[in-house]
Image (cartoon, rainbow over all chains, first blue to last red; front, side, top):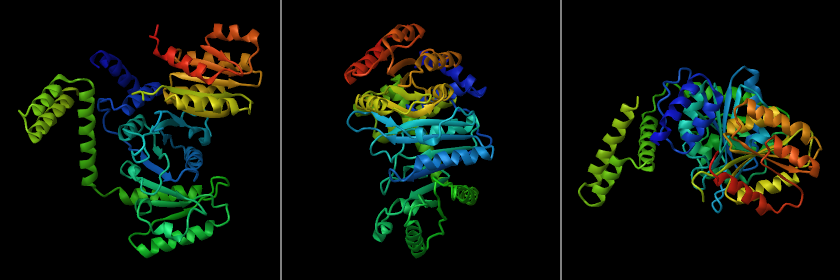
Length: 309
Length: 135
C-alpha cells in the first residue's frame, strides 16, 4: 500500500485537474474499499437520484432517457449502474449501459458495477463513489439498482430522491398492500405507460397511497418508449429534492460517520496496519475488553486520517 | 471467487447486427467469475474506447462479422493509444480470414478467435494472460 502512495497522489492531482481517467481509476479503488484522501468539499453538490424496481421494469431504458433529457438542459450526468453478481461464480454480466444509448459524450459518465447478493441490490462502497463523481463536477448522479424485489431499500440512504418503477400487470391489489419499498419511495413511476392496464395500475397504487395517508407521493406515468412523462418525472424529482434539502438529518450524518469509520478500519486491516494488528491481538488475548479495543481502534483510524491531510 | 474480478468490455463496432457469438462468450466469461460489461451493438470506435476508459477495464473483446475488421480494429487500437490505454488487452472474435490474423496480431491484438473456438480456450487465454506479470 505504501509503495502505491505516490501513484495515488498522482491520481489525485490528475483528478483535481479534471482528468477523466484518473476519476475512472479512483472509482475502481473506491469500489474496492481503498481509503482515499479527502478530495475537499463538494462546492455545488450534485443531486443523487436512485432508480429501483423489479428486473425488466425498464430502469436502464428510463435512465437512458433521463440522461438525454438532462443533457438537453446542459447538465452533466454520471450513472452508477448496478447489476447482480453471481453467488456461485462471482461473475457478472453488466449490461445496463447498452440500454442507455451509449455515446462518446464528455458530459456523460457511466460506470457498471456488480452488486453482491444480499447487499441491498447495490454495489458496495457506493457512497465514496458518489462523492468522487460529485467532486469531479457532475451535476446529477443517477444510481440504478440491480433490481429490487420487494424490500431492497439500500439505495435510499445514498440518494436524495428514490424513484420506484412499477409496471402494469405486476400483481394484484394485495401486492401494493405489502410493506417495503413502496413506503420509502419519494417518487413512483408507472412505467410502460403506453401499455394497456397502465391507468388501472396507477389508480390502484394511488388508492393505496391515499389510504395510508402518510404523505403525498408524486406518481408519474412514464413511457420511455414514447418519451411521455420523462420531463414531468424530472420536475417531480426536483420538487422532492427541494423539499428535503433544508432538513438536517443527524441520523444520516451518524450513519455516514459510521460507514467512514468501518471503511477505514477495513482498509487498515487489509493493509496489515501493525497498530491495528496489535490491538486485535491484545483483544484476542484478553488484555483489552471489546469496548477498550474499539476505543483504541477509533483513536487509531482518526489519527491516521488526520495525519494524512 | 476472486477478490478483484477481471473487468472486460465486450462490444460490437460498426454496422454489424450479429450478436449471438458475443453473447455466448459473455456468458462463458461471466461463468468464469469475470465482470463482463456488455456494451452492445452498432458502436463507434470512439464510443468503445470511451467505455473502456470510463469502466476502467483491463480487457476489450471486439466481435466483428461484417468484414470491416481491417478498418475498425486499427481505428480502435489507435484511439486506445491516443487515450493512453495501451495496457488494455484486445481480443477479436468473429469472421476473420486467415490471412488477416497475422496482420491484426502485429497491430497489437492479443488474440483472434474464429468460429468453433471452444469457450474454455478463450477463458483460459484471458486467465493466463491476466496472471502473467506486466512487462
